Amino acid sequence: MSVLVVAEHDNSDIAPATLNTVTAAAEIGGDITVLVAGSGSAAAADAAAKIAGVSKVLHADSAEYANGLAENVAPLVVALAAGYSHVLAPATSFGKNVLPRAAALLDVQQISEISGVVDADTFVRPIYAGNAMATVKSSDAVKVITVRTTAFDAAASEGGSAAVEAADAKGDAGLSSYVGAELSSSERPELTSAKIVISGGRGMQNGENFAMLEEVADKLGAAVGASRAAVDAGFVPNDYQVGQTGKVVAPDLYIAVGISGAIQHLAGMKDSKVIVAINKDEEAPIFQVADYGLVADLFEAVPALSKELDG
Amino acid sequence: MKVLVPVKRVIDYNVKVRVKADQTGVELANVKMSMNPFDEISVEEAIRLKEAGTATEVIAVSLGAQQCQETIRTALAMGADRGIHVLHDGDLEPLAVAKMLKAVVDKEQPELVILGKQAIDDDANQTGQMLAALLGWGQATFASKIEMGAGEAKVTREIDGGLETISLKLPAIVTTDLRLNEPRYASLPNIMKAKKKPIDQFSPADLGVDPAPRLETLKVEEPAKREAGVTVADVAELVSKLRTEAKVI
Ligand SMILES: Cc1cc2nc3c(=O)[nH]c(=O)nc-3n(C[C@H](O)[C@H](O)[C@H](O)COP(=O)(O)OP(=O)(O)OC[C@H]3O[C@@H](n4cnc5c(N)ncnc54)[C@H](O)[C@@H]3O)c2cc1C
Ligand SMILES: Cc1cc2nc3c(=O)[nH]c(=O)nc-3n(C[C@H](O)[C@H](O)[C@H](O)COP(=O)(O)OP(=O)(O)OC[C@H]3O[C@@H](n4cnc5c(N)ncnc54)[C@H](O)[C@@H]3O)c2cc1C
Image 1 (cartoon, rainbow over the protein chains, first blue to last red):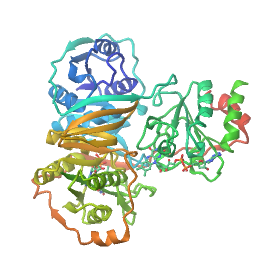
Image 2: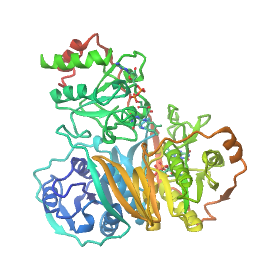
Image 3: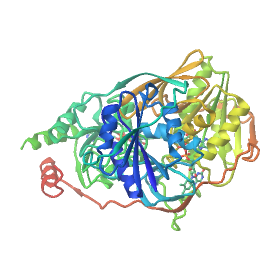
C-alpha cells in the first residue's frame, strides 16, 4: 500500500489540515508521499518533508499552481496517482474543489469526508448532516478520499526527514484564471484548529455586538465562529460559518451564544468535547447537546463571563 | 445562451433523519422530500440570468425515481422553461450522475451548468467538479457571486479563508453556495403554468451510462449520542465548572 497526500499550503507553510490528512494516511498504512504543487513553494515542500511519518515529498513548482486552481492541479494528481493505492486530501475548500475533479478523470467514485478508517477499502463517513454514519467499501482500483480533519489528530510537523523530489508540471489548462482574494485576517487561532471556539447567532442582533464575543475569545485564546443566520444577516464574514455547509469544528470547548441549535448548525460542532450554550429560551434545542447550559440574556451573560474570566 | 440546472430530490432539510433499525440506510418512507436547497439557489440564479437577458433558456434536469418529476415541476414553477428526467430506481453516486449529466450536456450544448455545491443528504460535494472534469470545462465551486461577461464568467467563491474571485472561460460549471441569492417562491399561476411545460424522459441506457454504484454501503448507524448535560445557575457557576470539572479553561 502507498498513499499520496495532496497538501494544502500557501507556498510557504503547510496548512494544519494537511497534518490531519497525514494521520488518516498513516491509519490506512504503507508509505506516505506528500504532493506539494505550488509556485515559489520550496519552503512549503521543505516543511512537508519534516512532517513525521512522510517518506517522500513530490514537489511540482510552476506558475500554473500558484493559486491551487482545480483545472491545473487535478491533471497533475491524475498523472501521479498511478503509483498509489490511495489518494487523500483534506476536506477543506481546497480539497473539496480539487479532488473530485481528479477522481472523475481517474474514473473513481470518491469517498467524501471520511471520519474513520476500517481497513484499506472500507471507511466511515457522516451523511445527512452527521445524523447517520455510513460504513462504505470501495471497489475502485485507486481510492480517492477527502478527510474530515477534526476526526484525525494532527501529525507532528517536525521530526520527519523525507526526500524532496521534483515532479514535472503539466502546464496551464487555460480554462480558468485567478483574479484575487479577500481573506479575513485575524490574530486569533484558525477556526477549525482552535482549542476553544465561541460562536454567535442571530441572537447577537448585529455585527458590532460580536465585539463582546471577541473580548471573551481573546481572554481564552479562542477563535470566533457564527451560525448561518448571523452570516446571512451580514454580522460576520462567510468564513465564520460553522455547520453542515460551513466549517466543521471539534474543539475542546465550544461556546454557543444566541444560537438555537438547528440540525445544520449541530452538524458542524456536535463532536466538540465540551459544549456550553447561552440562550434565553430554555426550550432551544442547543441545550440538548450542551454539557453546560445557561438560560440567560446574552447581553448580561457575556459581559459577566468576560469579567469572571479575569477573576 | 442555454443554462442547465441539475436539481436533486432529497429529504427536506427540516426533517430529523432516522437510521433504519436494520442499519441498511435511513428511513425514507413517508418522509417529506424537497428540492435540495442549494439547487433552489441554482434555479434562482439561472432564472435571474434569463430575466437579465443573458440566458435564453433554462433547463432543469433531475436523475432518480419517478417522483423526481415533482422536483422538476418545482423548478418549472419557479421559472425554468423545460425539464429532463433520467429515470432510475436505486442509488446513484456522483460519478454516475456526472456521467449522465455529461450526456445531457452533449445533447443540449448549454454554455453554463449551475449545480448545488452539495446535496444535503449524502453531503458528497462532488458532482459539479466531476462533471467539469468529464467535460474538460472550468469550474467555480461554492459561488457567492456570478458576473457574466463576453465568453467568460467572473465568479466569487466562498473559501475557508474568506472570498476568492476567479475567471472562467465559457462554457463552464458553477456550483452554488448559500449566499448567492435568495430563491423565490413559485406563485400559484406559475405553478399552474408549470404543469404544461414539457419534461423529456430518458433512461441511463439511453444516455449510454452504467449507473451501478462503485461503493457498497456495509451499514448505516446512529452517531454517538451525547450525554445529557446540566443547567448552571449563573456565569460564576459556569466558569467554575469549566475550570474544575471539565478542565477546559
Ligand atoms: C441548506 C441549508 C444549509 C444550512 N447550513 C447551515 C450551517 O452550515 N450552519 C448553520 O449554523 N446553519 C445552517 N443552516 C441554517 C439553520 O437551519 C438555522 O436557520 C440557523 O442555524 C439558525 O441560526 P441561529 O441559531 O443563529 O438563529 P435562530 O434559530 O434564529 O436562533 C437564535 C437564538 O438566539 C436566542 N436569543 C435571541 N436573543 C437572545 C438574547 N438576548 N440572549 C440569549 N439568547 C438569545 C434565541 O432564543 C434563539 O434560540 C442551513 C440551512 C439550510 C436550509
Ligand atoms: C445509505 C445511503 C442511502 C441512500 N439512499 C438514497 C436514496 O434512497 N435515494 C437517493 O436519491 N439517494 C440516496 N442516497 C444518495 C446517493 O446514493 C448518492 O450518494 C447521491 O445521489 C450523490 O451524492 P450527492 O447528491 O451528495 O452529490 P453532490 O455532489 O453533493 O451533489 C451536488 C449537486 O449535484 C447535483 N445532483 C446530484 N445528484 C443529482 C440527481 N440525482 N439529479 C439531479 N442533480 C443531481 C445537484 O445539483 C446537487 O446539488 C443514499 C446514500 C447513502 C449513503
